[in-house]
Length: 251
Image (cartoon, rainbow, N blue to C red; front, side):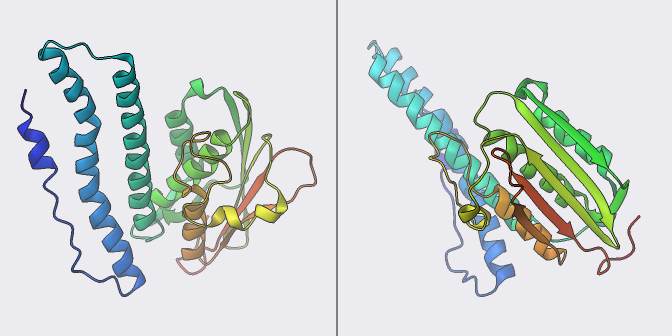
C-alpha cells in the first residue's frame, strides 16, 4: 500500500534563515514553524496505522507488542501535536488585535460548554461586572487556561472550580480557585514559566504553557497573574488583573 499524501505532507520547508532578533520576530518564527510542523505531525498520527495495515495485507499477523508500540507512538505524537498547538496559542496571545466589549458570562459559558459536563467537575461563577474591553480571544484563553488547569491538575475525578470577576477602578480582576491538592508556595512563581510542569507528563497531559499564557496576556494588559496563598490545606487560587485604562473605558 502506498500513501502519496503522506510524502507531500512531510515535505515541509522551515524558514531557518529567518533570525528572530526581536520578540515579535520570535513569536512570528514560532508561529511559522509550529504551523508547518503540525502538518507533518498529522501525517505521523496516521503512519502507525498504515504500517499495521501493510503488515496485515502482506499476510503477517500484527503482534500484541507491535500494537502496543503503535499505541505508544500515537500517544507521544498526540502529545507533540498538543505542545505545538499550545505554542501557536502562546505566539498569538495578548496581541490585543480586536479590542471590544466582551461579555464575561457569554465567554465563560462558551468555555464551560467546551469542557463539557463529562469532566465531573462543578464550575461555579460570581461575576460582579458584565463586560470588559478586551480581545475576545484573550478572554477565551484566560478562562480556558485557568479552568482547564484547575481540572487537569486536580487529584480526584471530580471537584469544584470557582470563577469570580469584579472591577477595581478601570481594571478587571479575575480569580479562579479549586479544591485540588494545591501548590506549595515555593513553586508559586515557577509554575508561570513556559514549558514547566510540577508532575510528569505521563501523569498529567499538558505542555506546561497554560499559566504562562495567562501571565503573558495579563502582562500585555499592564496587569499581573499570580498564585495567592489562602492558608487552606487544599486548593489553589490564581488571581489575574487586567488594566483597562490603556485601551479605553470598560463597563
